[in-house]
Length: 231
Image (cartoon, rainbow, N blue to C red; front, side):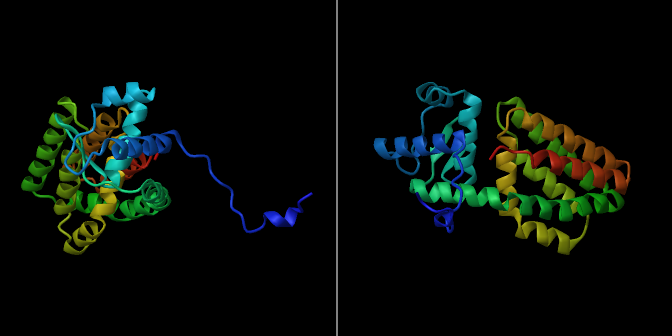
């Protein structure tokens, strides 16, 4: 009988999540069909039917690949392959992404909450106009069937600009690629784009009313919302 000490040095192997298994299957499909950079993957509905899963579940796998830069999901076109990685490297990057998500959220809470409070104190009419334009852009994207990622990015940039703090704005620019990971992962969740848009509106209302505390609380509530992902 093996002694209990022989288990030392081993780590518990976690059960892969469903979307991870779908990612493996998608990468296998890409390899077997010879798809290369610039080629289109089949439509989501077709892929979901082939794999025997719901489109919502498949969307999680596609978002994971988009977060890692393997595909580029273009509204009206579909998922375009950017490059062909190995399965092992993608699964490793997915787990690294999950591991660093709490730190990205922590950084956003530290920076963006302060930026929202400063924006409530320092905004100009032009700053408010930029935020309103971003809200309109995101709403139009969502109405057109997209996730609203471009409008979302424009909105957060507008809030950062309205704070009129060059150092904090530079810090946000420094972590922008990491923030993009959380943005894609969050907006890929079912119903999340609409929820995110509503929380953006609450932030703008607080900034427009020149209420720093309310703006900070609205931004924190928004970050708490977008940090809830299944990736």
